[in-house]
Length: 329
Image (cartoon, rainbow, N blue to C red):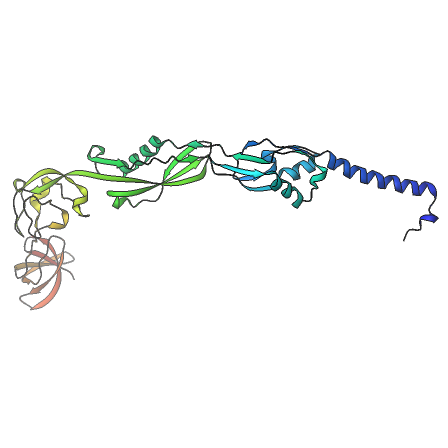
């Protein structure tokens, strides 16, 4: 413990001067802090800090500390949040500042508003329509798109807007569907909006002029071209290659006006079950043949089971032409 009586007078005077300087410098720093806030301010960021809304006069380090005092979330674009003077003074107190030693000019209530822009609805609809047309395998002239109108405006932060279509199952891009659109402002995702659209697509297809029986060979004069809704195909792929139609037959009966789809046709078998056939076999340069019976039907390239009549042996063979198969050795 310091014995003040034993200290020389000049040392005691020196210590008292330093103590007074420290006290006065602290008070001076506090006295130099000035805050001024208008009754209406704008927020530019999502989080609100004192430096965003206040004019601060203070030494550099104190100014930096004051500027970063968190005042909570800023209002959404286009909306207003009311801050009370007491709330701001309490925030100062929490950070260790004595509001009694700060010169401030703060209204009782401050209205904080975030600037905004309204999304261009035409731009949004154009983006959706463009996506639909690019992802449907028909000409754009055969697509009808009806966008559901909404009266509610979409408010966004101020900045450069970019639209991007979200995840969509393009195989189900017909009928009534919700198209997700991600809205970016200055490269940051600002909002996600679902656009309701009614999509109708048409395609020229072959339809039967009259009923056609199962297993009947097909010909051009049995069909006519008509434009039909794709949704009514129920996922079946229409057959539209008129030039190769004669290479096929019906797998099952179709009615008059029914669309010809790929699941309804088949290539006629070159070998039918119970047909008497020629079985050929090749070993090196040697080619031999014998007579057999087909145990299954098959088109060209199919692997079927056959019986060698001479040996009465069952083997697997590949259909290579009408009533001719090649033994698989």
